[in-house]
Amino acid sequence: MWRKTDEAKEIPQNFAFKGAPSEAFNREPSENVGMVRLQCVFLSSLLLVLPGLHGQDTRYVRTNSDVELSCPAPSGVAGVSWHYKYLDGTAPDNPDIASRDNKYSEFEHSDRILVTFDTVNAVYTITIQAFDGTTDQGRYQCRWPNDEPKTFIVELAFGPTSVSIYGNNPMLTGEKETLTCGASASEPSGVTFQWSKDGIRIEGAVTSILTLTPVYTDNGASITCVATNTNNSDLTASDTATLNVQSQDCTAADPPTGMKEATSTAAGATVIDGDTLTYFCADGYTTGGGSGVITCTAGTFSPLLSDITLTCTANPCIAEAPPIGMKEATSTAAGATVNDGVSLTYSCGTGYTAGGGSGVITCTGGTFSPLLSAITLTCTASPSEDQVGDLGSVNVVIGVAFAVVVTVLVILLVIVTVLWLRRIKPPCLGKSTETTNVYQNQAFANVTTNNNSVYQDLGPTENPSGHYQELLSVRKKNGEEFEPCTLRSYISSVDRKLKRKIYGHVIMSGDDDENHLTREALKAKKKTLRNKVWETARMKPNPSITLQ
Image 1 (cartoon, helix red, strand yellow):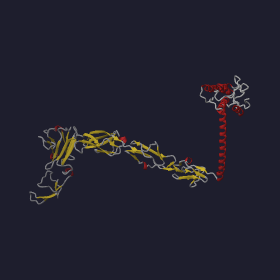
Image 2: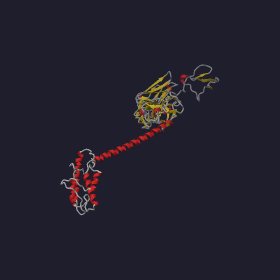
Image 3: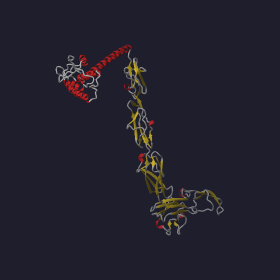
Image 4: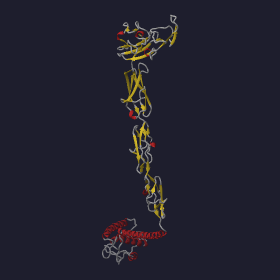
């Protein structure tokens, strides 16, 4: 308000001055009464410069909701009016909504416009009841006299629509992947997002992009993106995607020295993504604590096998007494402690000769490898000089004995052979030197035959074959028959006699028929007599039988 500086009398609020207002200025009155000093005082309830008093404000509202639009009224309701324009800025035929404390029924939707004035706070408000997005969207302006209007742009809130998740799917375990949630709404910044996995919200995932590093257990998980209208939380839309996570398997390695894997997984074996291997101290090693568990994660073990905290200390070995004939190179006593990795070397002692093989054993995890009893070194006792001399004497004796035995065996073999031959071919009985001489000097004189004839000397031209057949009937004086070989000897003696007498015929080799018959008859008689001989076991020759 305006007042005089020398008195507290107030000037009416509608007191107007020409020109721009100022905090203090002089005015020359119509009466010549001198100069009057006036001061403009700003009262807090009548401030014209308020936040949001001018400019533009955009509202996104829902269908059938009530929309309140307010603006200050520093000079009272009589100084403020409401007007309407379409969104494109053009005005309808009746753009006036309300002025002072009245509303204009000519306004198209005046039946749904409520006008109120707050006298305490000097605020002039209109309320659009049951907002209709089809007819009520537009520019609502609050105007003051001689001042710029306050414009409210009221639009129907919509969306989000066309919500979709896109990105790399399938994806590999352990690889950083991103999924994007696309949506459209009243304006680009009018949508908020919330990601969830299998129905559980993912903390901090409130933007349109989700960054994740999947593991094998994420395969088949449901990822959902919910988009919400910033101006209306009741307007939401969502999309769901199923993760297709492909595993990256690991390859098992040899366990560190002194450790072994619980399932005996061999080096080079495939370990499925997400599976674990557990290592512990092997026999002969003592654990020093720590963990030996590693997990295959996206193609790599975590932690690495070389980084596990498990520690295993090898137990020492206990030396044994060396086998007979051997000694240890460092003279390690039986019962002494041998640290892991230390080797003992055994060799043949004095008086023993090495037969080859290795005598090295190494302490490995509390046990020697190989065991002392399993080394390939062999040691044989070397003989002394006296033993060597005795051994030579023994060898000589053995050689002589062997020669004697061989000689005896040969003699026995000869005897057995002779006896066998005698058994096969019985000796001729009755043959003696005396008898042979009789054959040569007497032509079987006084020899008894079947017809009691006595053989005489024959002439050179006479064929004796007919007479000689009678030789086959020759017998001893006691009537016994001669053995076959004796008869053969007789005939041979006759042949020798005939040859000396230069006869033209012989019995054994003659080619005439009669001599042939004599030989055949002799063979038959020999066979008959031989059978008789076998009946008498081993008959010895009787030298007393001679021809008279």
